[in-house]
Figure 1 (cartoon, rainbow, N blue to C red):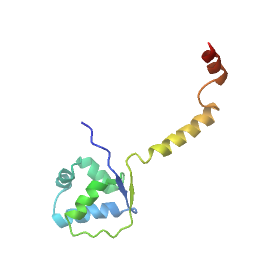
Figure 2 (cartoon, rainbow, N blue to C red):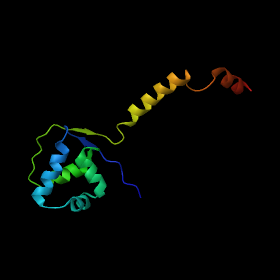
Figure 3 (spheres, helix red, strand yellow):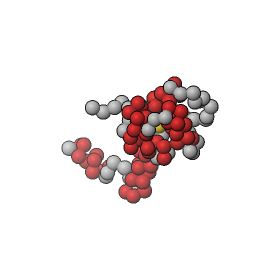
Figure 4 (cartoon, rainbow, N blue to C red):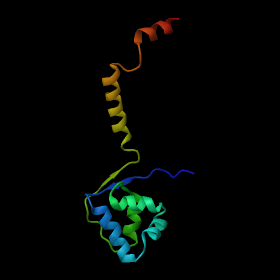
Amino acid sequence: MFKKAEKRVFFRKGYQEKLILKYQKEKTITTQQLSDKLGVHGRTLRDWKRGKYSMSLKAYKYILKHSHIKDTTTKKVKDPFWYVKLGASKGGINCYKKYGQIGGDQEHRKECWKK
């Protein structure tokens, strides 16, 4: 039902769009045809073109394998859910700033535990 999370590839700004457009021009295929080949929704591919989201490593390797495009750019590959630790840390800090302590009233907890 759900796809397994995949690694993501991060490029310098604008390169992801150029890569996809270069592949489409070389193969003379539409965005919908390419999205079908990559196994993603057309909207996802359009978001990749705009740079809204990073493309999957699997899609990147497919494009390189099936074209004459050379892999010469600097890129970063990140694991799935790489952003979770950052968000959890920021959420914890903001919660502490807002409420002062984490975990509720410690004295009340100790009293209930003794009972």
